[in-house]
Image (cartoon, rainbow, N blue to C red; front, side):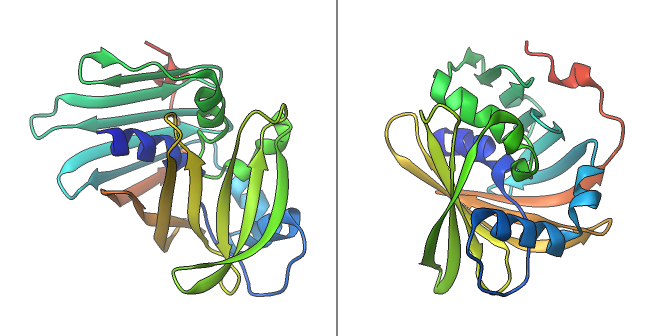
Length: 227
């Protein structure tokens, strides 16, 4: 369950694709992948996004998001009982596992809010997040640009990796609440209404497969009321 908790926190940070060229700044890396995935204008036109899938092949998962900083993540068991629920309303994080409310420390809460939408890079500038290109590293046998995200007051950071040949985001890395480092892998990008979205995420032992995405269905803000 701990791995599932982190994966659901981290899902909204996973993104999209770009074209191969030598890039020298974080802005270039991100602008390149915005262009490849369908263009920044098209991405900014997403007013809400929902996706359904499974964790481990048998645990139903539903995620709803409204940019820039609202999300609802719900996992259920075979009987339909909610086993995990997380709500981010843009200002606070509410997490419940089974019948127990799980507190989130301020540093992790801030990072979760900033990553509430699946393409957070579109909105991080609003919160003063600093982006830094930290060279390249080998990820799964291929070179990838490493972009480091640091919150405005410098209290926390995380990073994402974009394949130098395809521009696709292939990995995100987050510090955990207990000092552990959590890694989220992403792949299987497919076209959804002219925008490429990932259908497969892996964090530790948690394997998430997306079955369906929907955009601009008119999700109400009441879906994100913290309970």
